[in-house]
Image (cartoon, rainbow over all chains, first blue to last red; front, top):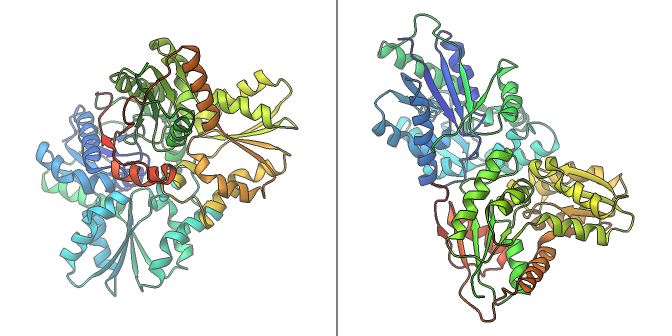
Length: 265
Length: 265
């Protein structure tokens, strides 16, 4: 089945997920939407995030997508269930894969989770990790400045160091052996975070795990592409130039054309 | 004339302008809209910012406002002219007052301007300052992390210090004697900025100057209120609770009720 897979995020961070999917599923055509006119989602209310997520999905449905990936933790936490009720295609979020992986890699089952205010408040990670590993001790913390840092390209240097220290200091004293990056922007801060913990922590980002689940669902539903169906397409709701710049740090220059569209009008 | 004055901003920062207006015009009824569902504006494109500004104005027009104050530098830079063409009531932005004030207070006419990416790129301040003072030397710099810092309440401490240093270091070496805070969020960082310059710079924020111009226009048009016409009203497009919290740092607890509304639908 050569229909494309739709992927959306509030901005540029979801490209980390797209990249992982491309690696395991090179034949699939991917259509990406970054809602840059309304980024960030993480400190907005549930109603607003659900509305934006529905509008993004409707935009992607125009392309007859066979599957949807919500490449945004905040949107997954707030809208996964609503979207699954509204649309009949398979829908995958990024939280389940990250939570599963954290339980697998943690030895002492003391797990840290960081994300946006909305994601942490939703307790989506906390509840899922508990459902996989009853005895897990979870420390969860919102890091609202990480998204603007990444969007500004300030992932290294003194400012990044001081923001990482401010948010993550607590985890050092709690003997956490695994830290889940519960936001698709955060992998861009991985080097700074690793440095802060001097390598003494396992860092889990859900991109690769999500890609594996996408492959599994395509196989189970027998809807994989058998030939390369078409070029990937990239859409944003605002400021395509900026998206290209930061996006190409993730995609290593592979991003060529980005179209600006309006959704939800 | 007892009709209210409408004021909008992308978020909570415009309350610094509202507060200054209340001080000089205590009889006026003020209606404030903070577009928190789409904040921040400063790194979005002109088309998007103009669209949001028109939608905000239309929302306020329902209340038969006699005058509009755009309490957002980005929106002023991008949409003041368009709004003046579309609507017949007097419309005041925050850039002209700040630019005028900077020229008045600067002794050496070496003036720094900081603001969002969109405001600085528009050259609105730079062109206005030049029109008032041909020989002025202007150093302009976008400080995109300042708005998230303020929205997170991180206006003091190590992180604020390191962000201020990163953006403002340049101004120290340029013998600038006046710095214009070209964003209504920035006055909340005033103490940290003052500390960084060790008091050796004049800081201009446009709130007070804007309030004076509002009074002048009401007088010229003979549309002042002669009695206290009604309670001020506060609307946001999302997350009223959060707005109340940060807003009350500006309003010193005077903010009681905030209603969530949708605009532009």
